[in-house]
Length: 113
Length: 115
Image (cartoon, rainbow over all chains, first blue to last red; front, side, top):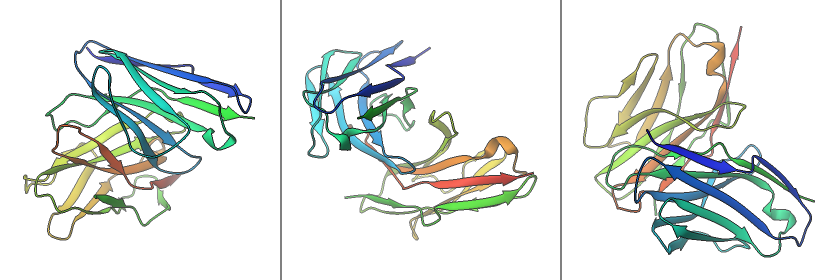
C-alpha cells in the first residue's frame, strides 16, 4: 500500500533562517506531488506541484522554492524565512489520470519568530 | 481559472440530526471531479466522498451523500445521523481532468456537532 511521510511535524524558526521540509511517498512510482499551505482557519493554497523528477511548477510568487531530486521525494525550501511564511504545510500525492483525490501527509506546523 | 466557493464559514448540528454543507464552483470544463475532505483537529486531511462530473448519480458513502447539480455548478454534502466525531472543518475541492491533477479548494466550513 502507498504511504506518504512528511517531516518534521512542528518547526519553530527565526526570521532569516533557512527552511527544508521533506516529503516522501512509498509504494508507488511517478506520483504527482504537491505542496500546500494553510493559514490559520483558512483554506489550502497550492504552492508547488511536480509531475516528474526535476519538474516543478509554481502557483504563486513567494519566498519559497521546491525541488524533486528523486521520483518519490519532494522538498520545500527557503533561503531566508519571513514572518509571513508561518503556517501549516501539507504535502500530497496522487496518481496521474485517476479520479481519486489526493493522499495527504500529516503536515508541518511552521512558526517563524 | 476554476474557483470553489463555500459560503458557510461555520455550521452547527445537533447530534443524530442531518446537516447540509454548501459548495459552488466555477469552470468552463465539462469533465472534472469533485471532492469533500474532512480536516479534524489533528489537521489530517481525510477524503470523505468524490463525484465524477460525467455521472448523474449522486455519490453516497454511508452517512455521507452529495447533491450534485452540474448545470447549477453546485455540490453540497449531506451528513445524516451526525456524530460527535463528525466535528471538523470540511473542504470542497475541484480537480480538473488534466494530467497535473491540481486540486482547488474552497475556504472551508467548520462544523460543530452539539451533544
